[in-house]
Image 1 (cartoon, rainbow, N blue to C red):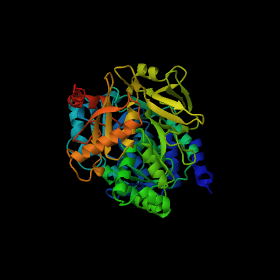
Image 2: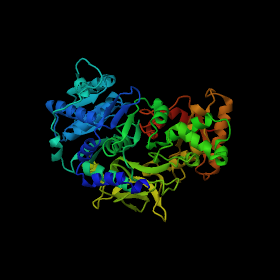
Image 3: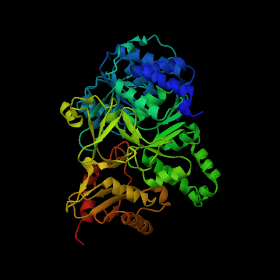
Image 4: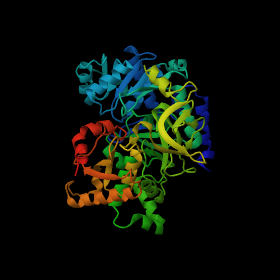
Amino acid sequence: MTTKDSPAATKVQARLEEARTVCDVLLNVVAKHPDRVALRSYESGAEWTYAQAYARIGAIAGRLRSLGVGRGDAVALMMRNLPEFHVADAAAMVLGAVPFSVYNTSSPDQVRFLLSDAGTRLVVAESSFVPVLRQAQSLGAPITQILVIDELVDGCEDLLRELASDETTFDFGCAADLQPDDPLTIIYTSGTMGPPKGVELTHAGMLAQLRAVHAAMPLAGGGRQVGFLPAAHVADRWSSHYSSFMTYGNTLVTVADVSNLPAAVASTRPTFFGAPPRVWEKFKAAIEASYSGDLLADVAADPAIAAGVRERLGLADTRWIITGSAPTPIAVVEFFTALGLPLCEVLGMSETSGCPAGNTPDAIRPGSVGRPFAQVETAMAPDGELLIRSPQVMRGYRGLPERTAETIDPDGWLHTGDIVRIDEDGFLWIIDRKKELIISAGGKNMSPANIELAVRSAGTLIGQVCVIGDGRPYNVALIVLEPASMGGRPVVDAGLAEEVRAQVERANVNLSRVEQIKKFTILAEQWSPGAELTPTMKLRRQVIAERYADEIDRLYEAE
């Protein structure tokens, strides 16, 4: 019997169809599986059953209500990927408040912007983030209360008693008053193209997302999952918070320190796992570095070797493995497919409640982002931009009616900003971001993402690459090396420079003359989220261009 035919998957579908709000889904799972482990911290080993999580949600909801939190109020959360996040967020949700997460790498001024934009007075946080919240407050953030989850802090209140409670007197009946079109959360965009915008998602929109994904890839529930991405990003909110914890009744293992991810995956043995391309590239580099021979050739001769790798990774039981948020090199997809781990690329977008299209194990086309899910209509604008119309689409950008009207037209089509082609079988192929196209001094339009993907696909030494060329006579690149592939050599090693040059030249062979990289420079430092990268590892092109302006100018100096 396949998962699609299983009674358990059918029951999940029925629960989703009956639900009016996400609260309904959560309360149903709690009622059916009170003794199942719901949340576990990888670092501490602490775990709560669904009954214990329910008690803590109720206790925190009661506390928030006593502090004046009510329907429609924005509640900010600033913490790492911890069990406490899930219960605190759910507590605000059942009150009809609008919980949202703040990226942990945000500067005080960025925190000020987000809290001011959302109109947030109350923040639930780890004590380690109190200093940055205080600085944001001094810059004008409208914070009146900070509740900490882990220890007593002067000037803050705490949730220690509520987080230790195994019983609650809170009346969850208030959740029944919520309406499908009520706001569920706010997801702030990465800010790669200007100030972040607050994407308002509704209960109805997230339910449409959950139903559509389950229809495409039905899962039985009661599985295991690892949560490690920032909860401020829609990928973790959909896949870990609303899907794993609230819909499927999985045991969700939270990873607060991403350096622990490989060990957490190996010990958890997730039944579903998703990660951005950079994680898969690092997994690939680590696997190859630990294997002395030609792994893929040996796997082709002896499938048992692949089975051993899957076991060591902890992915032997995984039913669906996804990658998204940025282009994944075909070599990476082919590598894991050869190991019996087909990476299913998906289209991710905050404005569509998460994931409007994707590959599934029984319908996969490497290099594409799959086919639209149920109730997702797609079309192409005359310039090739992907348009989406679906119940999953956001309510709008918070407080920005003009920007909302620019993004969602009068016919309900969301203008995604992605330039695509749609093949004869309906698979979507992302060519580039509309606003990131390079237009050379000669007037040639080019995709920096495609050029960068070609470079990263041509070898394993280059970890990050940013192509520069807009308004310039030719393309140049800033390159950051992959530590796992450096063999302990320093960045200034002459041999490394030659290997980088060879990788760039291999990429250039597959690029048109005008796309080819003519010069490059190797940077000594690694790029990090919150600086050169967004929290989901996308390039902050404007930041990079400003930070490395001197290096870029030198690459264009006359020889």
